[in-house]
Image (tube, rainbow, N blue to C red):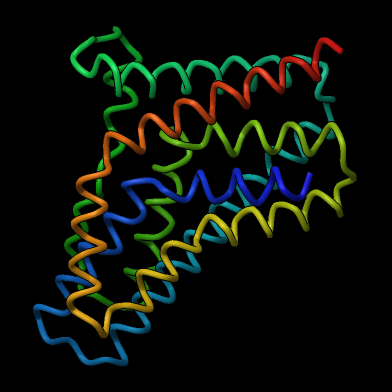
Length: 222
């Protein structure tokens, strides 16, 4: 289970929104020649806010599954949502121009927030919170499937530890990117890689969500 949690957390971490926002705003702060202390504070509180937001979302779902049971309505709902999100991401990779009524407009709303406030600790925390909320409907299918499987196999305390590990893997790329802000060449390469691999991320997310949904379905009907 621990390997599944770590791998799923790492897969979930490669998403354009959280990484794109961090690169965008750190780049802006660097261009404004912001003081190093403020730059470090912004990045740390942004990453911490995403970690806590995603963790509490997972804990809420985990508690819900524990109360109502994975074999009941919520278990089947989780499987359906994960499968739909997985197939949608595969559609985005193979047939990006195919329009799906209701679903395409809803999921297309996941965009980088246009935050106009001053770059401070409070704005970083709020921005991280907004990005965390935005990320869940877009790429949270892997997270949802993982939480559902944990609730089937683990106690609440064990699930809490696994979720903390999952979310540590989720923010790992952000930590790595943040650690490179002092090196402009590395920072620009990461920025370019994030832009170039956007479509490949859709394929990886789609495959991982679809596989997770199949595994969850297997546990439900077993």
